[in-house]
Structure formats: C-alpha cells, structure tokens
Length: 588
Ligand code: GLU
Image (cartoon, rainbow, N blue to C red; front, side, top):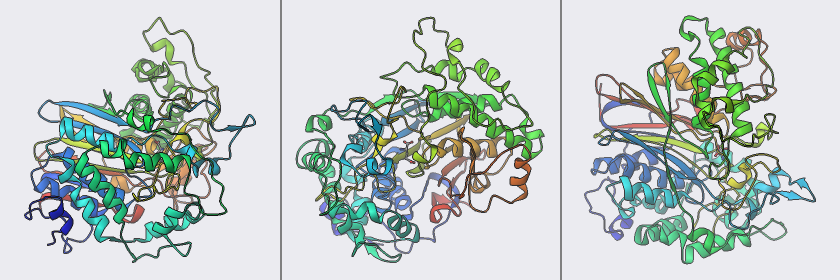
C-alpha cells in the first residue's frame, strides 16, 4: 500500500488508499456489489475505486478516473480537450448531461479552414494552433463536482497527481500510438521532450513521469477551475495556440485564441435524448453530439423487425441498413443546436422511423443513401428553411478513431457514463509548455466548407459522435455503454445494444463481438480477422462490402445492473490492450 508525498502535500488523510501495487491482475469483467467502474486503464479504475472506497459518489469517482486517464492515456483525452458526461442521479431519479465540448474561439469564421477558397489539407489542419478549441474538460469536471459530487478537486485529483508524479509503465498500445504520431510530435519541442526520446517513441516498459501535468492538477486542486481558465495556465494555453512551440524548421499554422475565450467558456447542462427500445428507455447525449439522436433513430427503425427471430445475417443486414439511414440524416441535419434549428423531434419520431424503414430492402444493401425529410414529423409549423438533404459529407476516414469512454456507479445507485477526448490521437500535437498536457484539435470536427449546418463559426461547438449512454428498464438503470472511435462510436453503441438486447448476449460477449460500422459510406468498416469469416460471407450475399484495411474499432466500457442487485463492470477483453473492470465488493 502506498501513500504519496503528494497526497500528504495535498492535505489528504493518510488513510486513503491511493494505488495498490499488489492490485489484482487487470481483468475486463468483474461482478460484485457496491460501486463499479470500467475504464481502459488499470490506474484510472483504481483511482475511481479509491474515491468510492473513501465514500465519494460516482461523480467524484468519475472525475478521479478521468484525471488519471489524462495521465495514462494522454493521447486520447485530458484537460486540453472536452467531452460529454451523462449522469443518473438515483435520489432524484433523473438523468442530466454535462456538455463540455470544446468551443470555437471568437475569432472563428466559416473560412477558418479554407485557403484560397480550398479546404486545407486535413493532416496539416490537425497539427496546428487553428485546430485547437477552447478546452471544456476542467469546466465540465467543476460542474459535475459542484452540482452532483460530494468531494472537492483537491481530493479527487490526488490519485492522478500521484500517477503523474510517480510515473506509469508505457504499454504496447501507448508505444504504438506514439510511433504512429512521431512526425506530428516531432514538430513541437515540448511534445518531443515529453513523449519522444531522440525523436522516437518510448518503448513499452519505459517508466513515464509527467511532473508538469502533476503541477497543472495541483494548481486546479488548490484554486479550482479558475486556475485553468484565468491566470498563468490560461496564458500558457493561449500562447501555445497562437505561437505553437514548434521545433525549429517546422512551420505550424497558429490559432487566434484569447484569454477572454477561456474566461468565457461555459459548460452546458442539457436534457438527455431519451428514446425507447423494446421496453428499455435509452438516455443518450443530445446535440452538439449527434450520437443520442442517431442511435435512437436507428433503434426506432430496428424496432419494427423481430430481429431475435431472424437468422443472424438477416438481422445484421438490417442493423447495417438502419445505421446507414440514420447516418444519412445525421450527416445532413445535425450540428450545434445553439446555431441551427435541427429537426430533432422529427428524427426521433417513431412515425418517421416507420417511413425510413420502408426504404430498406430486406435482401439488399442500399449503397449510399440520401437523407430523409424529418420536417414533416416535427409537429412544428414554423420550420422555415430546410438544409440540403444531400448535404456534402466529410470523408469518413477524416473523423477517425480516438478518444476514451468509461463508466462508474456507486452503492447509492448513481451512475456516470462519460466520453471525453482531445480528438485525434495526440490532439493537435501541442503540449502546453510547463503544464504537460496536450491541446485538442477538436475544431477539425467542423465541416471545413459549406453549405452545411456544421461549418465553423465563432463560439460554436463542432458536431460530435460521442455517445455516453445509460439504459433503463422499469425505471431503473439496466446498463451503461459508450465507446471511443470517432463516428464509429455511434455504431459501436448501436451494435452493442442490439447484441445485448436482441441477440441476448451477455455484455462481455456483446462488447467482444466483431464490430461492423456502416456510416453511409461506400463500404462498411470492419475489424481485422472479420473478412473471410462465415459471418462476413453471409453478409456479402446481401451486397455488403468491407473497407480495406480492416482496423480495430473502439474500446468500449459498460456496466450491467443485474436483476439480483449485483453489478457487473465490463471492459474490453482484447481491444486497446484489455480494459480494467473493478467492483467495490467482489462477488463469486
Ligand atoms: N472528435 C470526435 C467526436 O467528438 C471524438 C474523437 C474521435 O474519437 O475521433 O466525435
């Protein structure tokens, strides 16, 4: 058992168990009673458990886990980015969501990613100050703790500070991701110094410490969210965006962010998107994430079929086609609701789903489809302008596969489903000097040119696909689900729900099943090992085609609330290096 000097410096009682080096081997499934947590990082799950064991609630534990993920999985998430938290408050029996998505600086215009009227090269745009949105994560954590938590930053950040100070062992996955981003990281002096040695990725097994990130967390622990949004850290962020710490010889496009952009940043408390599916209530993330609406629309379409009774390939064909239709609508209509009048009620209507369902050929994959017309189902006579139904769609590869998702519950029944990100692996590639965290490139989630509801604008939040979800049965939490993976997040969540509810798979099987992601493209994304299988061939008979090369899709985490009152935390058995599921009291 260890208690670090940092914890003492933070004024924590020595009785708090932070990290136990003799912890049980990393396990992706755990059943027991009390609170539960599933994350992709052993240290993050341990941090959440330590806070639960200290009497913190699921919200406190979620912030502790998130802060630790910022240390151990810094290329997926962190305080330089943003996210969406879905919270079930057991005592009030209600779901709230905290939107702390990154926001475009006030200098943004629809032309920000254009040069001489042409779209900027996507990779160049990513590694730039211009790609950095005003980070929302610290503000999101602040709202979560102040409104729904029981502990202060000082306590919940302590486990992460300990990991950042003492270091953690670089995993194979971490090393591989660094290697894939060597060129991006080489462009920035601060990033090379932290994550590269002699310009190369750290090898698996290396101990990596991040004292600068520990310092950033200590300042937030001492002064709260203002330590991030005002003062020296805010100035360091603005400087890094506007004068990126580029290594000599690299030319990087600067951004135009101001201290006022940071000081003015607000998280939004939003109502969840709630839909029904075969007796479950599904609470998902509303706009500016497109996920809640897209998952609900696809499920509404699928509800009209008796998937359970069908041969597996037939049911999976319908899953792919429903996803295709929902994506056509998502791509055409959804963006920041403070800037556009999205036809959400129409898209969520069961009648609209019936109309969309009629467009599915039960025997044949449709290929690319156009968006439907949900306005007729809006029950809103005032809708004046309709966006183009065939709105241009960004290349699917350009919304790629990063981010982290995790989930926590506590003994009182509160539940958190939380996805947060810095967008691409390693975000913009810019580590803020002196503070050890990477800045996001979330602004590249805007469509670079219009007309499109999701074009860049000052103060706007780019459309997301992040899908933290909580499902209820008979008014009680039944399971949570969420995933990383850009726009494949939506299909991973959708497919896992179908696997679990329709195909009756236990959640670990539902998660580990091969993923198929149909996003209204020319072909369906699949994972290595899938093409050539009998399952693949059966779907090819319907005309489905697979994207090449196959790539791993997502790294999901879930919790199942069992009818006998026990709880099962479920993480990945194989993907992204096996996740970590922990429960407070283990069952048998
Ligand atoms: N930026 C993505 C989104 O908000 C998440 C990052 C990713 O997974 O690629 O949907």
